[in-house]
Image (cartoon, rainbow, N blue to C red; front, side):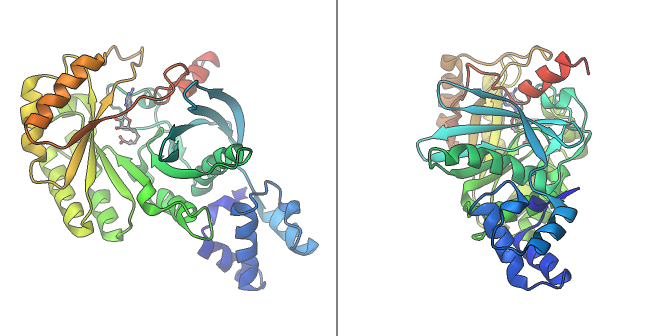
Length: 347
Ligand code: SAH
């Protein structure tokens, strides 16, 4: 059954009109969902009983249930959810001094097969619906409501490739970004892609204010194709051309993500190649400490080794940062909580 979270503000009003109701009913329902954040249709007390009955026939509210929640000493919370069809997905809440950020899953499994990533250990089963993504945010927001805190940032960096589920991701973001929805500012929202070039053009032309992050991870085609098979379809030259188009069209800076993998992409020659590659692009490089995934055998760098790479890159004139790690004491690495559960079930 469809979830009420599947409908954007505009779609909710269109639905109301289609039912022969006033457009305002759509507005009211939206208010119940995102302001009062009810989890039952019959709690929408200013709607007529018949209206609620129609809604109940057509919709559920939340399409997910909690399976497990882990809380780290640093405030990171990790949620494992089951969807209506039994699929497992995870979301992560991270606490920063600038606010609370949720890392959202966009697909059940992933087809991109990046060599270092836990998500690709299970192939994509299906795309998440827009409502299943909204529901992740709403669950976490309700969890935070107890302390009167709010989700202020979203990163679409959980399991899945968001640009392989483009329409649903954009619909989801429009609901959480809408002033009538959660009102999370577009500039507080980041979509991360492994580099699906045609979608980068589509995204550029959509002229949203969302931030774009590109998973680069290697500064030459040979290495990048080894780590990220998507590079065979969209090699660096095509990717960089698309990125130039995006930064020019949007007049916005983007982020390159670069996981530091010991003895793989961390040599001085990589620093030089990376500097050359990103030169002249309105971007900065975010160096990411690697969360080791047992099945893959890659290793991360020590803090000191990472600092050396960082210093060398800075010396080349590249703006860069090192990402802070979160939730080291829980199953924090990307996709690992889910993979652990699937294994336990013998899938
Ligand atoms: N498919 C999208 C978004 C999901 S992955 C993408 O590729 O960007 C989000 C980020 O986490 C990507 O940069 C990805 O390469 C990185 N990542 C994956 N596995 C990781 C791991 N074990 N440790 C650190 N970062 C990882």
